[in-house]
Image (cartoon, rainbow, N blue to C red):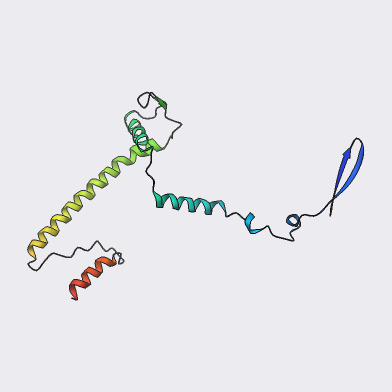
Length: 160
């Protein structure tokens, strides 16, 4: 038992308080009180967001702000988006990163398109050279076997 001393109008009063099971360590809190760690909840919600992958409603605004940064640099205000808006409240880094990465991403996509077209032309040329049938298309296997479906196609062709 704990004792609490109260002073009222110059008079001391002692009040006996029963010990709490939580404060004495004699009992653990009920399971319903236990909360998972914040990082676990954050990781779970992040994974759910990635699985659902909702479309970003702010993509147009982010693209516009990246364009503004690429054309004019850092700005405080722009009158051209819905009658004007202040830019630093959105983000200081996102427009700069968006402008810097946009060219690289577009270049990579263009390179990928060229490679895909070249591969398609090569497959067509090989198919013309093979009198027996179409060539088996197996995705690139780098270091480890990554594509079991491609290997199954090869096995089916070789061991019919």
